[in-house]
Structures are given as C-alpha cells and as structure tokens.
Length: 163
Image (cartoon, rainbow, N blue to C red; front, side):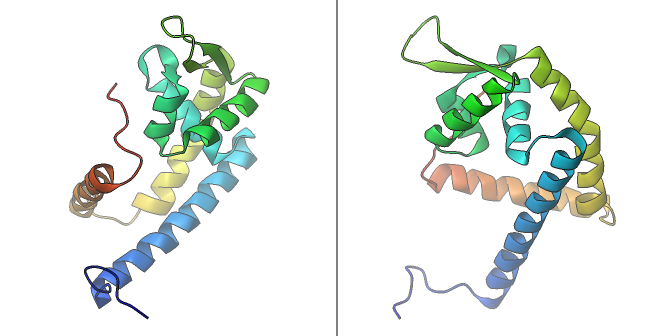
C-alpha cells in the first residue's frame, strides 16, 4: 500500500480524527431523532430553515444556500422542492436573473423553526456543552473555526457568500 502525500496520520491526529468522526455521526443521529420527534422535521430541514432565517430577507439563491450549508447544489435544490411542497419555503425565479432560482423562508417555515429551536438548543447544550469549562469551549471554538477556515481555503466547495 502506498503512502498518502504527507504521510499517514500520527497517533494523536488519528485519535482526534476518529473522535471527531464518532462525535459528528452520533450528534447528527441525536439531533435528527430529536427534531423528528419534537418538530416532525429532519436535521436537513433545520439546516435549510436556519440558513434562510439568517439570510437577508430570508431569501438565498439555491447556489448560495448550498454553499452556506455545505451541500451540492442539486441536493439543496431537491430538498428545497420537498420543503416547498410542505409549505416551509418558496422557490421562485429571481427577478434580476430569471436563470437563478431563489429559496425563501415562508411564515410557516419560520414558525416551524421557532418551535424547533428551543428543543434543539437544549439537546445541543445537554449533549455537547454540559461538563465543559468555559475555557475549553473557547479553545474548542477557536480550533474548530481554524479547521473550518482550512476547509474553506483548501476544500472543493468554496466559500459561502457573505451575508
């Protein structure tokens, strides 16, 4: 077996990577389960609604939405269509460029997100933050922001649009 460029992960890198993967997979499972049980929505729905809620006017192009949440454009488009059928978002052609499809948060989508947020935050606090000292949370945030910047700089998807 040939070695990857830069060599294999050392013991601490492998330990950190496996810990991250276990955590990421388990947290995704737990958040999806909680959102389904409490709000009848998936974690993917929550991603879309949350991104739109933070966008100017509650609207983003499908391309910008995909970059914001780290999905491929086709996945974001198909998921938004399913959410539009449930009345959570609207999909329209952009007024400035009819080739661009925009996704907008509806009042129903905003209501569903507002109803889901308290349970989601409680779960995240209980499973992720409880038991961590504030200094550890600060270092963790700084470390994860650094890793995310590296992914944005060196990954294939590119940076999400600002604002």
